Picture: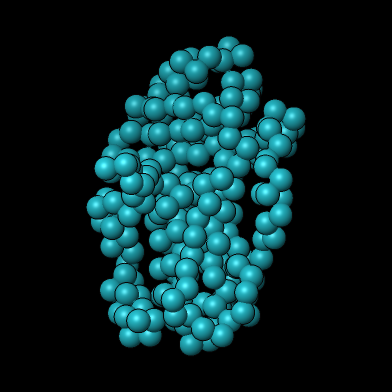
Length: 225
C-alpha cells in the first residue's frame, strides 16, 4: 500500500493529491458549506467525484485514510468519519428553520421506506446517497392525479406520498418511485431555452436501469391512468 504522510491543516489540493495517490484514481474534489450533505462520493467510469464540507480540511490522518479506504473498497464501516462530524457540528451552519419542521416517518402500515431506500442505495448507488426519506402526510383514499414522490434539494429529503402505502400497491412500484427520487438527488438539472429541465435524456436512460422498470411502468399504466 502506498504510504503518504498527511500534514494538517490540509489544502484542497493536498487533500485531492493524497486521495488520488491512496486510491490510484483521478479525483474531483469540491469543498462545500452544505449543512445537509457533509460528504458524498460518486463514481463515474474511473473518476471519483467527492463533495465534502470544508471542516474535513482539519481532519486527522485516520479520518482521511478512512475516506480513501471507503473509495477503494466501496464498503466498510466509517466510525472515525462519524465521530469527526459529531465533534465538529459547530462548523455546520444551522439549517433553514423550515428543514426542522420535517417529521421523518419511514415505517408505514405496509412498507418501510428506510429498508427500501437502503436496499436500493446498496444495489444501484454504492451506498453514496445521503438523502433522508419519509412518508408524506395526507389521506390514503386515492392515488390517481397525485404527486407520488418528490425530492427537495434544499433539505436533501425524499418525500413519498402516503397514498402508496397500501396493500394493493406492489413492492416493485414503491421501489420504482423511491429509485426515481433517488436519481433526482444525484443528477444535475439543466436549463434549456430558459426553462428548468429535471427529466433529461440521461435521467430517463438511468431510470430504465431499474431492474423492475417494465413491470412497475406496466402496473402504473393499468392502475393510475
